[in-house]
Length: 256
Image (cartoon, rainbow, N blue to C red; front, side, top):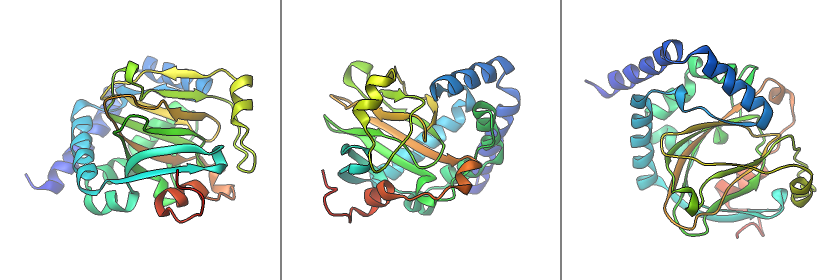
């Protein structure tokens, strides 16, 4: 079977799964939890064939194109980003299955059923999909919000919870880039923590849910983040300070 035929078959299998493999109660529970907490685990959205193919491609890409980055950002209270990444344009150039999954209209419609509103491709390409690997003790994706409304994260590898790597969220918060007041957010809202396992998917309301990955003390965490927009995002004036710095590393004072 040619590679393009294999990819087409996998995408078709994902589409069929979304139609026939998810029951209404799963949609209802996911939508309720997402609207309540800004976070929900949705491993049922993809069959094992999709997860395996995606994981294989992610492992190949991070081994061949991953770049170590150690930075912090004043827009989120100088929280750190200590990780290895593969950027969007490298995934698009060297990957095959990931871009097809992201472009799937059926998959975005499924996410829209969870969100309770349309989920759209991100207009800012660097945030469409990014691979992140935490590999050293202390590695973390520190507290932050995202510029756009939604993210779906596919978990390829994750350590046991006692070694960190789990997600923490503070829902119903707002990002003021000039004065993020992280500590104020923590004392006025509860912090929710969620254990993850390889093969999990989770969906986040990223513009109004302050979130982070708890620092690693052992093991390895490997994910791909797929970012999406809401209709309201298309009418916003959005700057991209943290993403531009993360990829370019050019702003003075941002190296951790």
